[in-house]
Image 1 (tube, helix red, strand yellow):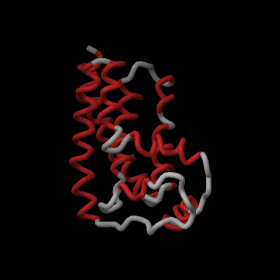
Image 2 (spheres, rainbow, N blue to C red):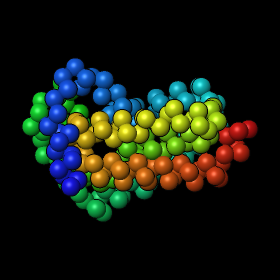
Image 3 (cartoon, one colour):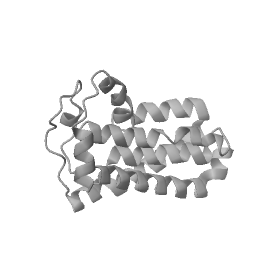
Image 4 (cartoon, rainbow, N blue to C red):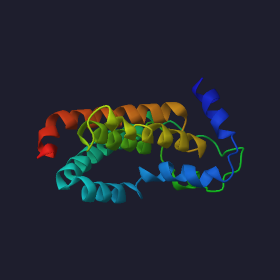
Length: 170
């Protein structure tokens, strides 16, 4: 079922929307995360940025070795053409999705400890499925990779929100 759902997304042709989907597909990766955390630190303060860095590093410490332990292959090259070749940027195993894990981590931290109280803080939640869809769309992952990654990242962020929520609040 995972492969069937993923292949349906892999076969989509969205043309110019490729450029829009590249943003959530790259935002939570190794190129975008440092800039994202700097921006969040400038907006929400150094305490939030410090906890976001710890959450990010913890998520990496879990997902990176797990990728090599599970050793799930990434999808084969896509049948549908893409305006951007994001799939070429990745060559390690697929499960769990590190980008989706980082999306889950940062977004959950924003929802739980960010500037808006619940339920207004839920405004950030669409970032997770947007990242997940983008990673599958560009052929970097299967759906299960992204779901597993998002769950790991959100779980880490929840723990950090409990442990450091009062610290972030100042």
